[in-house]
Length: 438
Ligand SMILES: NC(=O)c1ccc[n+]([C@@H]2O[C@H](COP(=O)([O-])OP(=O)(O)OC[C@H]3O[C@@H](n4cnc5c(N)ncnc54)[C@H](OP(=O)(O)O)[C@@H]3O)[C@@H](O)[C@H]2O)c1
Image (cartoon, rainbow, N blue to C red):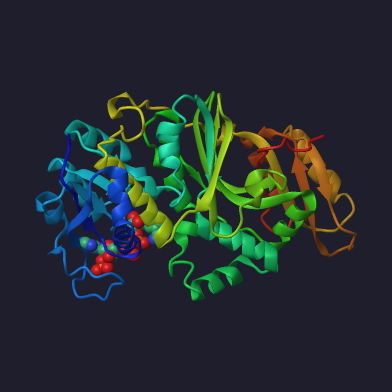
């Protein structure tokens, strides 16, 4: 039986680190009642000791070197809140595990890229590697997949996994502005990092998706196999056409076990407006799990920020204080399956295609012939009015088809001299209530 306070050492005192200290202070009493032990910060480390911080850290032992702290501090748990998939963050976690200390982290890049190896090391050392805060911040999806849904065979897990992208797409739709205009405004308001690439190019969502897939399917984390596309090429025109066709454009991460292997993809999707996930707007995240006994579960909440992320870090600490330690990815690390990645070429789905073409007789017949030659069947076509000789948008949606057929179709369409811009291709996903299809 464990007794006495749970001593923790915190590496990183930025947004999440200081947030965690605030939650621990604000709810010290109730956390003690919940876990049966006080949770006490014994040591901290950050890059710059004399930096002004929104919480007082003078009362804690200070370490200039977070790796030394992880190895030496008087603490049962090391909380890694520095960030980055390699370098110092990884060294801190490895040192803590080697010293027999539990690790709590919010670091999705680290878990996505090194999760399997770290899980093996942690479980061999008999310590916990906890990372609730790494996926969708305030949404307790890791615990839900690892514990609450244990009775289910899960077939698919997907969601809106990046609040920045969802905010940008929502603002574009509401204001009619371009991606660049909304991004610039979001940066000036401090909603988005100066370098937004991780967010808008889909990498952050892919990190989270790879973790969700490992948890849902009991397989090794395979970030390298995630198909990733971001939202930079989404235009106000496509958002308007989506509206007209009854869709919302969302950046989704989708993982499923298919006959061809593990399919993991992050890309913009057309989602029917009546699907529950279509109504998740702004900075909110959503994660959906499809299971054989629950049907569908959707959790919605704030995916980032000081409060939601710290809330998840502290929930992990409460589990450890209670002595509730589970395998990192639900299945013990040595038993995690290695599932071959499914080829994106074999992906099966419907598509939205927007072409900018010179309005000339016969254009449409040429496009239709190319689609027929690739065995792609059209579901609908939208063209507003005629403007002979001018450049006009033509929008088509297809019935379900293989990705490779669509890629071939687009390649041939691109080579037509009347097509003046690279076609815009967006996959259509049919979640929730079935899509109205012909
Ligand atoms: N922010 C969010 O909303 C959010 C949400 C989910 C997950 N996360 C994850 O949480 C982690 C932390 O994110 P954050 O937003 O809190 O980052 P942050 O505000 O940039 O803070 C990073 C902290 O790490 C410290 N640090 C940097 N290099 C260090 C080193 N060599 N040794 C010791 N400390 C070092 C910094 O020290 P100084 O303060 O002295 O510079 C700073 O306190 C990341 O893995 C991130 O992906 C963040």
